[in-house]
Length: 87
View 1: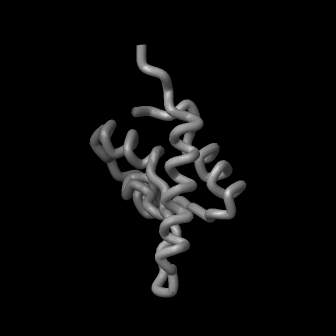
View 2: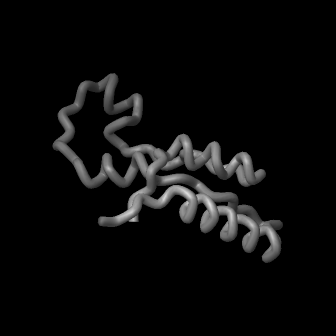
């Protein structure tokens, strides 16, 4: 299901729940090296669609199961509050 909010709004909603998310996976054609080299890149609509909706969740060695549960519950809450209704 698609959400009524975009990635930035999702990240903000998670931050309000004290869960810091980020954007760490940028499509290669968006890298500065590709843009400055003016390389021709084929149209990649699936890549662009997925890239604009991908977020990085908290992940580190000392993350406890309690914290994992909290992150999971926060994601579920944001999704439930923002899912688009189907007709």
